[in-house]
Structure formats: structure tokens, C-alpha cells
Image (cartoon, rainbow, N blue to C red; front, top):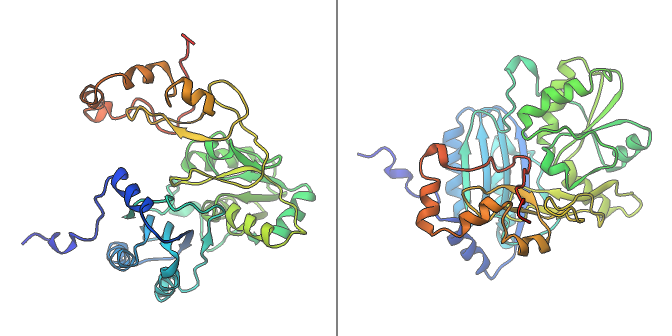
Length: 349
């Protein structure tokens, strides 16, 4: 008997196009929320299957990572089933005190299918277990406390990747030039090496990266480590609820779903990677062999056929079969890493 036969309904094999079509044809509203928790999970695979089975019935979509150290989730739930969803999550001993953070901007196409994966860690960090103690983290600051600390000259550090901070960040924040969280941790420690007695403010999208970073910095001797409670997402919620609080975040908040970003302030702090005009819209190169994530204005989008370079425009002119053959085999799967710094070739422009 096939050991996987009982799990045939615990995976969604829809393509992106099929999934998006289904979502866009829905006649109900959805809520996009994120949550995480560091907690020792005895059997992540067993919990994974349990969550998938329950959430599939509630028509939950999204991306979830489970490991022995906890959960990290970004999901979309039908509004009419949201209470059932939160009740189910909090009925589990692991997550009974979990905090849900709702998206700043709601669009129904945030996610197109449910994916729950078991990983070694819920955020890849490259750290050894003796380099941090996640039970010994920094002080959590609400929006008011965060603003006051910024006004008093505390050192602010963006714990996101370069393509995230490029379109939005807190004013005067240190933004490490890193493509992954794994790369960023030692960079931040080095950048702050002379500030071990200073007040350090850490922030990220929803708080999960700062939780581990604060534990890492405290382990390495930093005395006054603080983190933005709930990340940028909850900061914006608090700002909207209390009009006496100043919004110190400039630009957009990058998100890892089909929306790509949420507008936080009207200020545009980045430029089109092709023409240099003011722009903060991320796109993926239309050449799926490349899929490069970069900033492109509408004018360049039209001019360059949704592509990042002349090479990619040439590839897009090939037949589907020829394009497929270009990426056939592991070594040719992608021309570029999807978040790599843009190196545009527009020599014939």
C-alpha cells in the first residue's frame, strides 16, 4: 500500500494561473493576515498535516512554514470564516496566545493556493543553536515608544533585505546591503560593533526576524536591544488608530505575496532601475527564465515589454518550446537569482 495514499488531499497542485483564476472569480471578501511564534513543536510534520486538513476546509490560502522552533505564516481567509480560523488556531496549545496582524492594504489576490512546508527553521538564519537564545530577546516597543526612541536619537536598523528597504524604510535607518537574512545577521553585528552600549531599535515586516536578531545581538553583548512590536504592519495599524502619532515610515512596505507591497506613506523614495524616474513598483521580468525582481515604471514597462534587459526581450521573442529548452536542466533553470541586484543591459537603447 502506498504510504502517501492517505495524504493525496493534503497538497494543492494548482498552477499559479489556475489558482489566481479561482480567487478572482470568488464572490466574497478575504482577510490577509500574518502571524508567527517561536515555540518548540514536537512533531512539525504531524502538525503540518493537521493544519492543512483543517485550513483547506475553511478555504484558507497562503504560505506557511513549520519547524521544531515554531511557525511563520502569511495567509488569506474568507471573511465569513475568519472567526472559525482564529478559533481553530488558538485551540492548539502551541498557538493559544498567538497574535494575528492584518494587512495594511487588502487585495483578494494576495495568495492563490495553500502551501504548508516543514523546514529546519522558520526563518533561515545560518546560526548555530549556541549563538542565540530565543527566550532572551529585546524589549518590544509599541508605535508611541518607538517614535519617542527615534526622537531621542536611538540607532535604527532595518532587518529586511535590500529590495525591501529600497522602497520603504524608517528615516535614517541603517539598511544593510544584503539579499538574505542569513547574510544580514553578521553584517549588522559588524556595523554595530561600536554601539554595544547604545539603544538599538530593530524592525522588520511583522517582527519575526527582529525576534531572532535581538536574541543574537544580546548573546553577543549588546546591552539595550529593542524591537518594533508586530513590525511595520502593526506599527501602521497603531498609527491609523491614533491620529496623534506621527508616521515615521517613508514609502511602501514590501510583502511576500502577489501584492508585492503596501502603501504606507505617499512619499516615493526609490527610482526606476531602467530610466531613473521616481518609482516604487516592483515587478518580475516577463522572461520566466529570468524572473528578476526589479523596480520598473509604466513607461519602461511598455518600452521594454515587461522585461529587465535586451537579452530577456530577445528570449521573449522565441517560441514557448525554445524558451522551455533554455531553462531545461538544473543548471539552466534561471538566468538570474530572482532578488539579485539589477544589472541591466540596455546598450542598444
